[in-house]
Image (cartoon, rainbow, N blue to C red; front, top):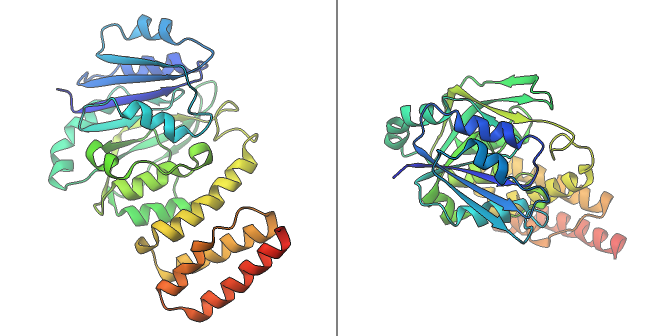
Length: 300
């Protein structure tokens, strides 16, 4: 059986043909393709049948749109079907280099030897016309998951979902965080799915991530939702993943969270301040509790 599943959560047809063509063009065909149609108004089957007839693939034509509720729900719905040990979630407008699968298998023995469960590929941003916007390549070959997360959080590196391959058993242990637009869900996935092992970074095959007005990343339409997602992301960092990070980082994150709740009226999740109690920072807790009271009074 193939060890790798390539999973495409499909909704937008605009660049889907290029995505499928890149999958079909793989020099190593030892993968299984899974495509889940999230109740799209545009039928992708003509494109799939035109290009992928010789591939091993499964197509799921869902009648309920889950991506509109939360993209991670759509990802997980398709992932329930995979049998392979590893998987990639490839955006329906993104492109993989023809040696993507080959590079994964070329490095698999090293990946397994290191007991890694997250593999990250070098990537590029491209526009609607397939023109290169920016090329990203980083100097490390391995990186600790918490270091990766902090670098992404502080905008020192760029990352998205498509350029990762995850170990299926570890994914099923943790699943994806359900955040609006799944904005940050991939970052938490990398942090959790790494399972306290280094992330392996491969540079010899590129993933092209499309930045366009039709994508969440490239559109200004979702800016407020992105802001709210980042706010929720901070709460998740504090309440679920604080053990990965220093007190100084979590303390700063709590203050940022409190400030946004006060200024913008975004939901205040009270358990964030209990972090201080767990670390016996009583004065910090009392100060945060006072601020929480002011938030309640202002937005009651």
